[in-house]
Every structure is written in structure tokens, then in C-alpha cells.
Length: 129
Image 1 (tube, rainbow, N blue to C red):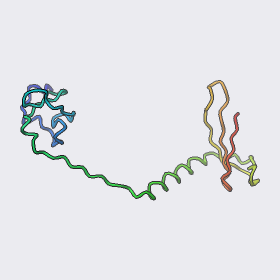
Image 2: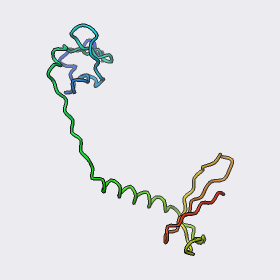
Image 3: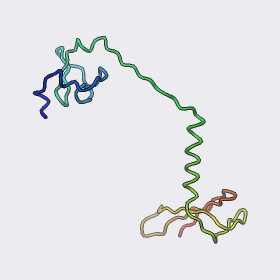
Image 4: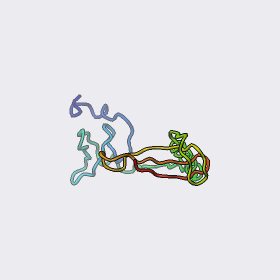
């Protein structure tokens, strides 16, 4: 569809803030000369006088700090427990069975790094294999 040949009343697809093109949503730049603002993307044009007096308002909702910090921590802790090694003993409390996750931290020709966590005392151990 060629936007250059479309009637100006049909080009205004949605109501946009004065800083944005109502046809394509691109940011409108103020004219260097003249009284017409033209979109650099779709060539939609609007009279500068049509923009005078328009206002832009914003509403920001804030999330309570406590609720934001507690949920991601629980999620990260669940992901951290990962797989179980039922033979590994915790060096801190002696519990048999530790959860582990693996990551490739060094170059590809070297072994992976294994992160163990004790489900009982939350002690952490790292092993390079």
C-alpha cells in the first residue's frame, strides 16, 4: 500500500501523542522551516497549528517494594536446586544428597563447572570437572 496516495483522513489510523505520527507511530520531528510537520517514515503531514495546545499525560503505576523482591527470590531458589546427586555428602552438615546445576564457564575443550547446594543447610560447593 502506497501511503503517499492515501487520503490524509484515512492515514490517521490511531490517536497518537503529539510527538508521534498517527499513521505509522514514528517520532515526529519539528520542522526547520514552514508550518507543516512531515513524518520521515511514511510522509504523513500535519499542520503545525494542529499540534499547538495538545497535551501529553502519563500515568505510572508503582509496585510495592516487598512484593517485587520476594517472588523472584523464591523462583531463583527453586531453579537453583536442579538435579539431585543422592551420593554426595555435604561437607558442612554431613547430609547425604545434594542438588546440583552445571555450567560451562571455561573454554569448550575444558570440563564444566558443577554447583552443589545442600537442601538441608543451603551450603554451597563448586567443583570443576
